[in-house]
Image (tube, rainbow, N blue to C red):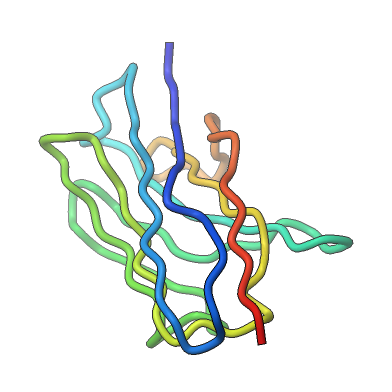
Length: 119
């Protein structure tokens, strides 16, 4: 059974940093892509960042480019999201998700972790 468990959320002041972690289990993730998404109150879920395990390639939403960094530890099946220079608009529930590389649909999601950025 595939499980994704996020941790590391919390309250931070604007300009501060947090690092989110996603512990993945139940599949061999080397042939998958791992993404981070977020959903703010009253808004649709939006893409934040993705890492492709096989190539190490990373991609970011324009809103977080240059402030957030996604990384992974293949041996530990861990994915991280380092969030720097945070803004109040980064406040959201953050989710990690996985999908087979080359396919558009994410098939497993974590339960989410709350990030609140105060002004």
